[in-house]
Length: 429
Image (cartoon, rainbow, N blue to C red; front, side, top):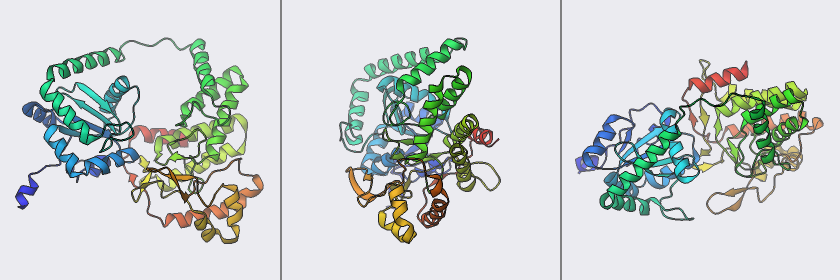
């Protein structure tokens, strides 16, 4: 019996170095890393490739893994229909870059987990991001999608091949081969006007939800202001950075920025923390302090650095890649607070903190699946922290931090990436 069980699948990720691939080493899916063996097997067995790209701290990658890749029913369908390949986008940004372009061209959007189905010759004919196990919310689920793909591959293969050839040809035409225009004042003005048109005058940032920090845009605005003396450029950068620093996208208890805000107001973040965001935001807040002399920007830069040196630094001196959004299977669980917890930790000091950081009994953080309040709160400020409150808040913050440290911590991606380390070193310099 045991030998039969062992031959049901052979997951080949256990010997990989990537934390993301190792997270999938126990899946019942017959995963391959990206290698010639996988593509040769697909050719020999005449199967399409199921390519799944993600990274170890990606929340929706975890959701799809729990729903589908750890599920025996889905795994059997995948093993019967595809040769399945897992790629860590941080380990192989070259592969991710190609197929993300495919996804954006085919669907109009992108993200992770990135799902590509392609021929054994690496020519894609289907692209998506997160796919649920079962069809819901207008998204076709894996249990319905895989039989459809199998039917099309078996009975309409000529159409599939023709489609994949057209997609591949289009992508090749998009590939950078010609030099861009010479950088000039007109292009800089066009970039400024584009940002100005998308600026949110009420909440700062650009566009609507979701909102990303995009610090290189802020750095551009600072330089544009310095060059042209256009006060609106500086005002847009300042308003955005003040709103982010007050919002739930900032970790007020442990410092550092979460990856992006799911809403227009910067309140509810996607909770993962990336090294490159910390590095670029240190640069942005430092340069804004240099431009304005306002101490709030210096303090924010120093706090981000304190977070990185405390939680993201290898004993030998390099920097880890990221921290997960999830702990104990729930996004944000490490970071959110009930009113009762605040009262338990702070005692007589609870009321001022509850008022200052907009904590309520019903909470402001909704349960993901059912969109209902859970009593959990994301700490955020409506106005910048009053100077007279700063000293007392630091004492309160340290108590909350010590309490939070006892919680189950999110997973840390301990990859050391040269380019991201270079950014952080530049930010510190």
